[in-house]
Length: 134
Image 1 (cartoon, rainbow, N blue to C red):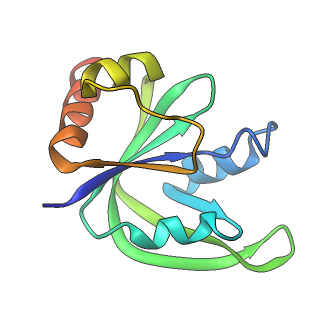
Image 2: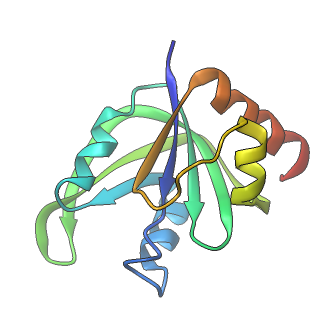
């Protein structure tokens, strides 16, 4: 069984939101610098990915291609690992962190680059978004 992931859009380290805008605009998930960039490498094809924005909640979702891309980040060589997301959707209504914890039945720890969940739990979040946030 696969996993699903919540990837933080990096607003803590980038309050102006350029990384978040890039992820939304390019329909991808991304992480930067060691050791965080390597977390993207763990995502496999067809796994569900949710983009989380600090203070707002989950703002987008997609399905992983499984192909990790590497590029320069702010002039630093190969410091961005990213993966394009298929079936990408930006949420009309962000899914609040408190509501995510309620849906999954446990308190999600949000202060991380990436949070993994089992496929069944991710599917609950996906279905809630389909019914309430698009």
